[in-house]
Image (cartoon, rainbow, N blue to C red):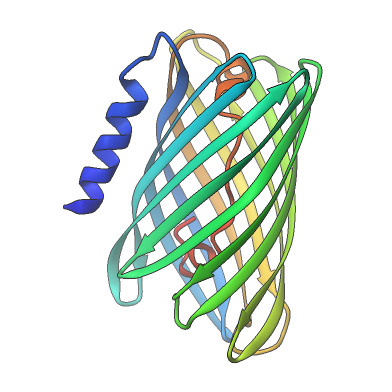
Length: 254
């Protein structure tokens, strides 16, 4: 019930003033192929998601929330994700900070970091973020994670993206390096404010136990965009996505 209340509150906030801000509400399906501790595991998960963004003058803010379920060997489990961003913008630059929380079956992961974005005109932008986190997934963990990304807009309503990440996991059992890369696209081909999302994400650690795992995920989703305008304009209001949750990748929630 608490998770549903959090999602409902976030959705109400995101749609409360659509004329003054932009954002989206959506659903996403994930097909997850994992190798965990030497075992092949297949999971399916879905989520309802939303983001709301606002900027005026030099300041901008963005909040996001998701509620979903993952089908594991032990049965279905629910999860929630919350995130908030505050940034300063000047010319083509945006620079700020963020905080995120991921909650799954009484396990939590929190991450905090800095992020930035630079726009090369209407068709290109690049982004970077650096996060530190703590998690009690399986065991107590400390994580660091750096992510670089870029977007190309073929048209204002057709976007292609790429990202690459590098980080480290540390616990009493040792440390391990982690890396990720992904491709994604979003397009709106109709007059209705509905867009389709497609993505592929790869995530893996190096060999030392107890962290040995990797995952490949195919994602398909749809979003209802509010506030009017093109996808490019909506993304100017909701420019950031915090991909920092190691535990979410391990479980296959994304």
